[in-house]
Image (tube, rainbow, N blue to C red; front, side):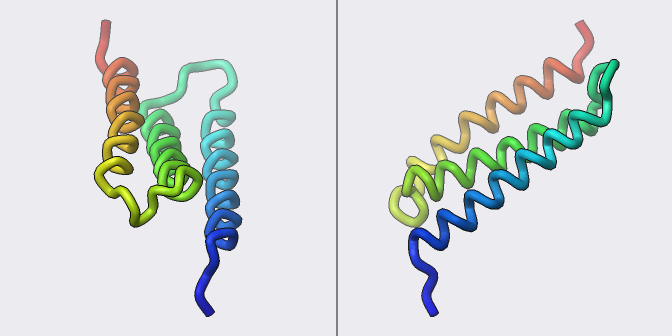
Length: 91
């Protein structure tokens, strides 16, 4: 049985919600202090994964426009790298 477009969106929606809940749970572990570096890395990685699912499935770019999908996915990776550098580098 071949999965339909709505089945893929349904599955992708569940993954996006699950990734959001996981990143929220990781962030909620430290109430009064700043997140440790490993937690920041985990939250940023989950955010990049969510962004990739949104770009591929909800924008309809899965298998159709791979260069555009890669370009759109590069923006969150770039900003995640900037945020990580800001969090890890002193000053």
